[in-house]
Length: 292
Ligand code: GLU
Image (cartoon, rainbow, N blue to C red; front, top):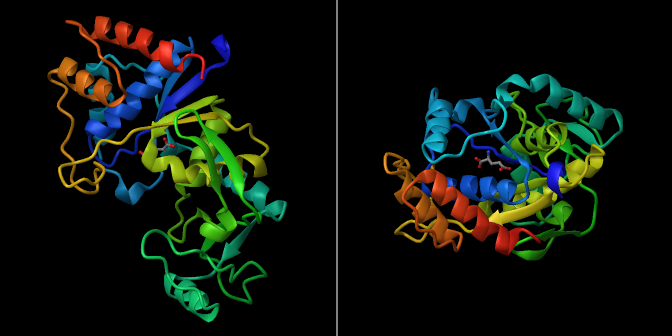
């Protein structure tokens, strides 16, 4: 694989890293090193209203404290709207994306008319109301026309995965009603332009993968290899997230932080310096994941 491996860690700067985010960052770094590749950091500040000023610098410092240094200066999604707009325009020109005038209420009403109930968790399945046109209404958002059928993909850790995006998610948003680009479009456009070959990230993102693969295909981009890492659960059994107030990762003792993250990944490392810890962890990682 050698020189053809490019990996990335792409945090949203909505707050400092927590123990769970270090697991994903460390795993992506180790996988890069085990394959002799390049490690990029992308600050995913595309959802501007949710970002916290200065969180990007805190995150980069936390990573640096743990010895995780990007091979190129980090890229910021907030500066890449022109790329995302070009991707959207291309999809619209080819009939693969369309404008949507629906509010959340309209979507609920549309689902009710079709006799479909609202899911207890997660997003509403878009009923396709604006697929055939806006009927004179103003566009609010832009959606991908999800192709019918089940998409199969493979995760290096979780194995064979399947999702029928059209049935389970519906036509999904690429550009939001508030004018910001959606995560799905930004992540796929950037992974494509940056030539990312391997994505290693938290398991909470696994169910976005089918949507991202559909977009890669629509944009004629290659599909990277995927590995979704185990989540760190809080005392309440829920996954740690900035939204449920997970504590900021304390990197004043980087070896303690690395030991905890390493344990989640099944690594048993004893070392007295960060450099030695990472070298030993890379060897262990390579033995398990180097060939997969
Ligand atoms: N920015 C996303 C997050 O912090 C991760 C995106 C990805 O790795 O694909 O949850």
